[in-house]
Amino acid sequence: MSANTISPSERASSQAIEPASWRDLRQVRQLEQICFPKDAWPLLDIIGVLTLPNVIRLKAMVDGKMVGFIAGDIRSAEKVSWIATVGVLPEYRGRGIGRRLIEACEAQLPTPMVRLCVRASNDTAIELYKRLGYHGVGSWPNYYQDGEEAIVMEKMR
Image (cartoon, one colour):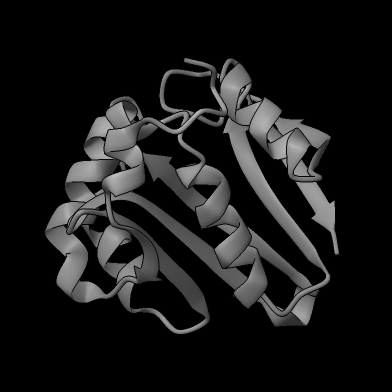
């Protein structure tokens, strides 16, 4: 089956992008730990992203289960928004869920520029971001806990 073919089981599943809230704390924390075993956010950071103003927070749901999450941090004074995190459970990757999360988040961000950081070794994510119009604008050495560099990517809208 090709990557663009949808299986009958996927076609029959119920998929939605919905607003996330503090009520999703447990699921977001689990998703972070699974998607980012080296870099999962601490509990207080997750609470912050789920409750602070000027943050767009969305979840991807498949058949009533949270399978993805994204947070966009709006910095209006700087005319930039940052996608602070985006993750999809491994067993749901390759189905366009990450792309849909990013597009839904971008649609709610009021700034002309959107930025994000990605592990330099995460080729799959980098390719997705490029397909969505992002390009590299710099790097942050030793950004991740294990010392790996982050690639800073940007999209003008």
